[in-house]
Length: 409
Image (tube, rainbow, N blue to C red):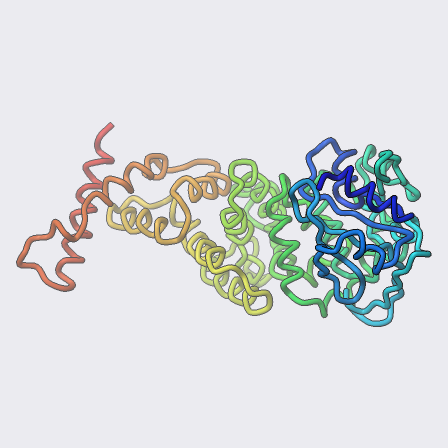
């Protein structure tokens, strides 16, 4: 069924159908929409089911269906009003009946750019709250005080600022601050979902900067917030304190790779500096160890993906050692350790270069050196060797192969 046929069936039942949300926003941003969602007005659920008997109901507290349109399962919701009755994103009384208008449905949405609708089949834009102008001017603006009724909207606004390069206006920042109490009680998986999407943005640092501006960074990501004010030797990090350095480095790494776990490892590489006693500043002796403690605390509060933790732990331990190694055995162990961390040599190098501004020769040639060592396996060990002796032989041979490779120009 095409969208045209879908719209004709709705209109033949005396109802109206609108494209809504992100697909309308992205149309005016000039980018392809990932999903297309619809809202219906002026129709009962029984009439809808008569029009689309094969539609699959997915909404529990209000009518939402999946309908196959243009070969894709798309979400079709009935226009609704909401009234806050409790805490969190579930604490709402929902009213959905044929009398609810599209303007009322849009009013409950978070920001103006997400509160536009395009009526079908005409394509007429319904933009009662000025979303199109805000998109043109690059502004994220709350539709109303109802923004605060779902506290994760605060993280979503910060994340969309990072994704789109938009500015969150002051009144919306105030609404974000008002989300603090309920945000502290939200399920961690909702925060994790926003973090994942923020790290995928072109400039992920904006996500954390906006949260800081809204006084929410210490509440949502306290290990990152703890880096603020932790001064560093300006000879190595002239960009400022540990937070400024971390966010600048995060954007540098994001410019070089889209890999999320690599970006996360960059974000937390200096996490231990947030635990440095003030009397030790601007030095951060031992922050490689305290960084692992801070990462563990983060994981206890907000369970992190295993591959993120593994890569981040390796980077935290090795980011200071890597540029300074000269002993062949230690270089061999590091290169082999990169492979076990889940990072590629190239991804590890992106982090080290962003942190230090340069790479040692063994890392520049690290991918080829790693292959040279890995060409030697335990199957080539002398037949008389057993157990640990095979491992020792393998390590010595790989170090020998590394030495030969590095001496070749």
